[in-house]
Amino acid sequence: MGLEHEALTEQIIGAAIAVHKKLGPGFLESIYENALIVELQRRQLHVERQVELTVLYEGVEVGKHRADLIVEHTIVVELKAISQFGDIHYATLRSYLKAADKQHGLLINFAAVTLQVKRVRTAV
Image (cartoon, rainbow, N blue to C red):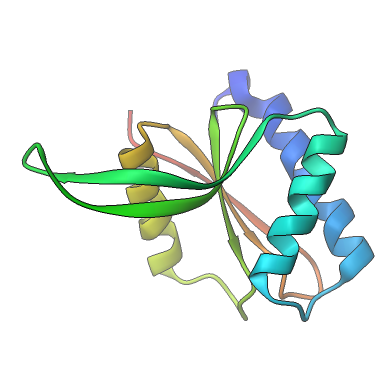
């Protein structure tokens, strides 16, 4: 991830760690989403939730999808409550980044004993 987004990324990860420490694993993804929004807003970060993305094929709209969070109009955050990340999760986030016209994303998994965070970037 570029240095220009490092500070913001660290703030998001810090907020996710705080949520994970307080709630622990075992809840639905939606509970973590709600708690993370509270924590990000406490840190005075602008958060958009369930952002509708237009999916284009050959310049034609073929559908809509929703990204979990976009923080500070810059970082797409995809939340999970799963046993572990798979290749599909990285590929999916890259597709969301493309649809949102963003370059930086975070995959965050709350279901593990230790919070799992992976940085994802689109090809430049």
